[in-house]
Amino acid sequence: MIVVFKKGTNSDNIEYVRKKLEEYGFKVNISMSGEATIMGALGNESALRDTPLLSLPGVEKVIPILKPYKLVSKDFKNEETVLDIKGVKIGGGNVAVMAGPCSVEGRDMLFAIAERASKAGAKILRGGAFKPRTSPYVFQGLGEEGLKYLREAADEYGMLVITELMDPRDMDLICKYTDIVQIGARNMQNFRLLRELGTIRMPVMLKRGLSATLKEFLMAAEYVAAGGNDEIILCERGIRTFETETRNTLDLSAIPVLKSLTHLPVVADPSHGTGRRDCILPMSQASIAAGADGIMVEVHNCPEEAMSDGDQSILPDDFDILMDRIDIIAKTIGRTLNR
Ligand code: PEP
Ligand code: MN
Image (cartoon, rainbow, N blue to C red; front, side, top):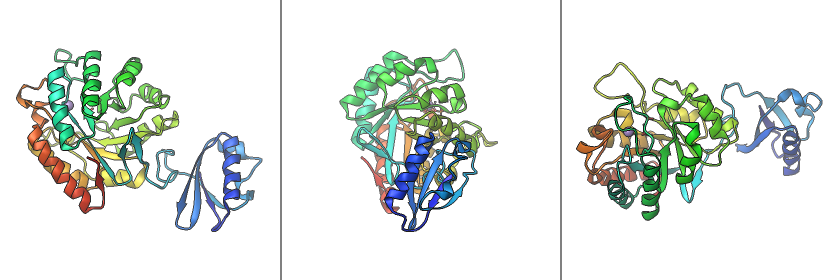
């Protein structure tokens, strides 16, 4: 529910209400809406039977949160969440770029790509060590060896690591090496996995499922938040449509729509979103122009020989151009590309 306070209510009264709600086990968030203070509160409302909120000092009205997602909704928290991951900010006008190969294929290639990506200004190194491949007969990732290379390369070039977790049994292993846990499109509704993510103290990037509505996407994020982890990034990575010229259809309108519904940062992945190298630059530009808080891009130093997703990977030289372009676009709309 949303508790709206009377204009000019003093902070002692607001604190009193907050303490009362927290005593009853509510999760509380306070924000300002114009001149009024509003409080998002989530918990067991029937516990308040004997303490009607309207009788508490300063309370003007109490409005239920009608959306099925609560903690991640704009109703619960009006201002944008800004994640600060070891000094790298995402959200609230801060644009962050995640770049790297689809799969970690070896140490040398990863170091070469990380060097170029960091020089161009990417702060987060991506790379899969456990790959969700359509065929069981193709490269499945290097596993822990790949995670080690990711950590080493990221440390060498002053970057963060993001890598995919597919199975709750690998949680500790992944968390030992990464800074952000990526949940892939195919696992967006793996509710057991989502519940586990609620219990860790590590940011999570949730990718939109191949056929998930935005409501389903936000409900998946709600699973993580409800477990107690509110460091969540949403990633639009294209959805299945009838179109066959592209691998997926990058749903650009999802960016402003999500941002109107949730306080969480929203990033876009034009690589998986289109599956086409020639679309990465225009769709990265479009994503930033549409208000994305960042992008994830697959970069490879020899895409023809990539073990996965070579067709949608760009060369480091093209990544340099992309970074300069999105920097200009971000500045134009009053945002900051942290590079
Ligand atoms: C990835 O980013 O490596 C990936 C597999 O993406 P998605 O889950 O969006 O297909
Ligand atoms: Mn890929």
